[in-house]
Image (spheres, rainbow, N blue to C red):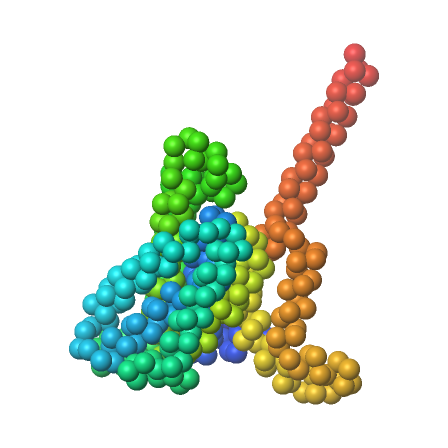
Length: 347
């Protein structure tokens, strides 16, 4: 992954050009950031079992917060990013403290309400800070030159890769920690966790805040990559997109969340090219009309995955691996049995 920007590897139909070109690097960086975002949602949903429709709120808080601070202050990128991270943690703590008073569908609806409120706020453009429907751009005066411009897409790709690695390390550490084991146990049986003297509410709140903080960091990296933050990234629809990535890859699997996000992002970006291709234009109307809509194709693919791959991509790979291991073990047992028979015949 680290060396891809230095190599000349063409992937027709997947990337717009060889891996070293700016267009391909930009798309791969976007895949890496969305993979990191899916990992943060995996911590929330796959580990803690909290179905949130408001995770995009913290991603947008990171992107918009950084854009606003860079635009209206003289702070450098790191200083502004640190302030935005603190603000995102405070926001997540407040929202989580309220939302976690309920569970299940009620929790999902409360997080949805907060997400919608955030989306309305950025669209209303209070104080002319968020830019309304046009969003907020990246002021590059206090941003290092190595992160600005098409010629530096390679550096931005490495930043996105570093963000993904950092998020993976944090998610893995949290999941393997004592708090991670407690929150997984709470997902399975909250009453039993209370009986042994643990506090599920505080553990869930901690997990909620960590996932939100990671999303805010990814949002800041997204602003640097895209040079703009638009209201769509604060909507509940965006959270549902991240949820689809996690389900596509396999709920409960870290690498599944990464693979699901990469596959979904590539499909989302490249299906638009396929939909407008001469091949689709030449099809009969009964095929041309649905195939010219990328969202229709994505929806059909997602339905097929849910129907035939209930565990997502990770579940399918695990079943194949288990089946292969079973065949090898049965083959070994058959060979051992044959050897025993030969020995019995000789004796």
